[in-house]
Length: 286
Image (cartoon, rainbow, N blue to C red; front, top):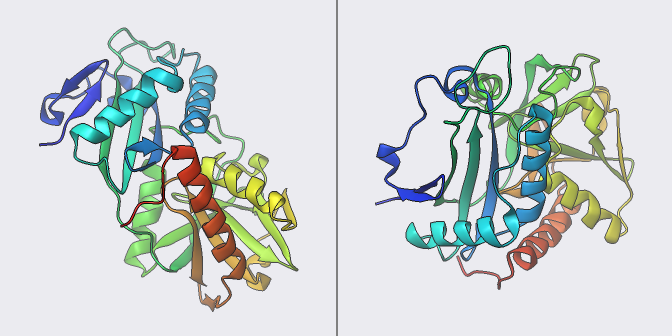
């Protein structure tokens, strides 16, 4: 039986749920993080918690706990209790807004803070990615926030999958490349690794940040900036990054095949080494 950590207690997930007046449940007023665990320990946990804290600050909330010590140990116990202390797993942390006025973002006294853990399968060998007909609003109040208001992503992803794609890419209202529904996007063009800058409206992904740092250390020229859609047509490589998968090559973007994966393969190797080191363990045999 799986177990969930919620507000300091270990509970049956069937017995946990938000209050009917919780604005996280009613309006998507909440935050979440999805993290990779390797052999019972979370990789890049501090970076995820910094982003969670930054999200709380934007909403005027106080992050309910520190990662170092308290929540890192809780995550480890959560994985152990769920039989996930070996191999790779997904850990999710979430905070709801609780009850309160629609005119006030203050967290209610009944707000919930919880973590779950589940098994994680292998990343796909190559993604087939489409182009979304919807635009990201880079000027919106939720831009760059890892927010529980996630339905926009799910609707776009569902349409993509019904059209035969595994993911979808968003442009923003200025017509520049932004991100995928569940990942950040990179491309290699003219020998330079490029990714949309944060002012595009994209999420400040933890894996995105790690990959940029690893590329710089490896001597791979890289740049953050505004990327017009036409760059997808001339890119030598495209790959996506997420916290649980790291870099994953795009095999086809819309109707264009992309056979080259050299940079993505190199960065995936470096990312995996960094993830293992961050989790403080040895490379698991899976």
